[in-house]
Image (cartoon, rainbow, N blue to C red):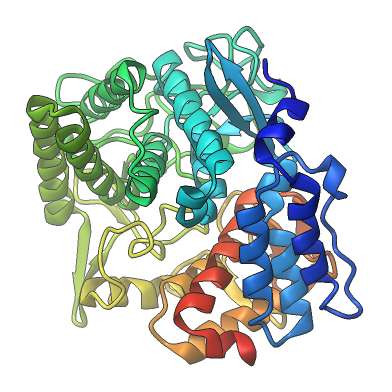
Length: 475
C-alpha cells in the first residue's frame, strides 16, 4: 500500500499548492477557512488550488466566496484515500460522515475536478484508482450500492441482519439502477477530459459486461431475477415487499430499480429518472467500447439495450393532461403512475444535468414546473427557502442539493440568483452544504459532513464563473 507520504512526493510542492487556496481564503474578511490544515488534507492539487483562487476572485459576496472555498475542495481535503493494489492506482472515496464508498456518491464527489485532470498527473492517478476500484466493486456485486475498503469486512452496522445475498466487502446491498450508471458517467467523463485509456483494462471491461447483464436481468422479462432484499426496520422505505422482490410490475422493457438514489425503497419499481439515466450511460458505454476497445459487438449490445429501455420509458413513463405530457417519477407497468420528485439525482429535476434531455426541452420544462410546486408532495416552501426533499428525511426538510440542481438546470438568471441566495443563507453559519434543513429553521439540519452536496455546490459556482460570471459578482 502506498503511503500518504509517497503520494505527497508525487504531488510535488503540496504545501505551496495548499497555500494558494489559503491565500485566496484570506481575501474573504471575517470568514476563517474551515478546511483542514494543509498537513492534514488527504489530497492536494496545485491545479485545484489555482482554480479555487481564480473562481473566488470572481465572487462579489464574501460569504459566498468563503463557502465556495470550504466546499469546492472538501472531497479532496477529507474523503479520499489513495493507495495501490496489485501494482495499480487504487482510490477509495468515503461519503463524509459514513466510512464507506457509495458508487453514486464517489463518482459525483470528484466530478468537479474532471475538467482539471488533464493538467495534473496526480489527479489523473486519483481518477484511475477510483475507476479501477469501482470496477472491482461492480465485479464483486453489481447489486450493491455501498462498499468497504477491506474486501473481507462485514457490512455496515445497520445492514448486518439484512436478508439478501450479502458478501464480505459490501457495505450495503440496495439495488439502485443509478449505482451502475454513475461509474460509467465518471469513466466517460474522465476519458473525454483527458483522452487517457489506462484504467479501461480487461477488469474494467468485465465489470461493464456485468452492468449490462444486470440491467437485462432487471428488465425481468424471464422472471424476477436473482435480487431480493428485506430489512427489519420501523421505516417501510428500508425494506421491500413480497419476499423482498418489491411491489408487482408488468415487465415492459424498462429496468426495475428496487431503491431510489436516496436509498429509499421505490413504491413502483419502474423508476423513470433512473431508466432515462441508464439510456444515457449505455450509449456512453457503447461509444467507449467502439473507440477504445474496438468491440463493435458489445457496443451494439449496449446500444440495443439503450434503445429498448428508451422506447419503453417513452411509451409508458409519461403522463398527459390538458397542458401537455410530463414525466412520471415511478410506474408499475399496469397503468399506475406516481408523480413526485426527490432531491437525490437521478431525479426529474436533474434530467438535463445527467444528459437525458436539454434544459429547454418542453416535456422537461412541464415536468420541472410540477416538481418545483405543490403538485410534488415533497416540495416545501418555508421562510428560509423553497426546495425539494424526500421521504428519507421527512416532511419540511429541504435538501440544498435540490436547490443547487435547480440552478444547474436553469435557463433563467433570476432563478439562479435566488438559488445562490438560498444556499448562502441556509448553511447555519457552518460554511458547508448539509443533507437537509428545516424549511423555516436552517439551524435544524442533518449531516454536517456530506461531501456530495459540497461538491455539487462547488461545481455550480465553477460553472457560473465560466458561463455567467455577472451572477457571482452580485448574487
